[in-house]
Image 1 (cartoon, helix red, strand yellow):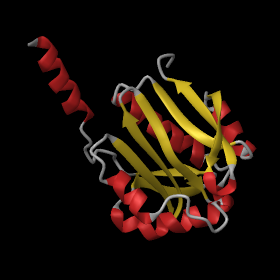
Image 2 (cartoon, helix red, strand yellow):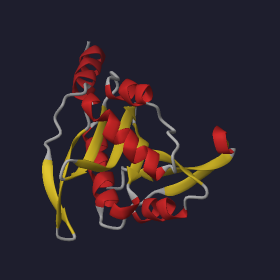
Image 3 (cartoon, one colour):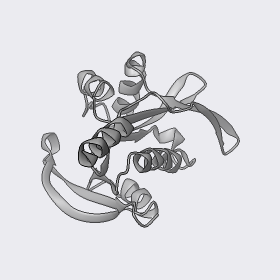
Length: 181
């Protein structure tokens, strides 16, 4: 009986609720709104993705919508300068892993602290869902992103060969242990 009750309790805790409290944060004397991403934000989100990935759309509108409506606990946040989305991050919880599914910051808004802030926000969310680690994949050629992730406590796990099919580029799988925090 205890096992069933414990399982039910855990599943109720993991259920996804729109609970992220939108907030305004200042980065280098500029105010930004950080809030959950909704289906109505798809055009803006794809615009950011298109700029960051040099015209490509690694994730389609339908892929993002699938994630937003997933029954798995997840959090997708956007950063807005005025009404313009300038960055976003997505995290999906799968058992004890908080997986960063997508993360992009427009070039003109990089090095302001937005990326670190977003990583902190999804880490906090993952911890409330009892995750033991954060994980992500990053292009082996994206050294700037790798530096950010390492500063944030991620370590390299392994190379995933030809992970990015279109470019036949390898990915570096990185993990951050949350039990140490």
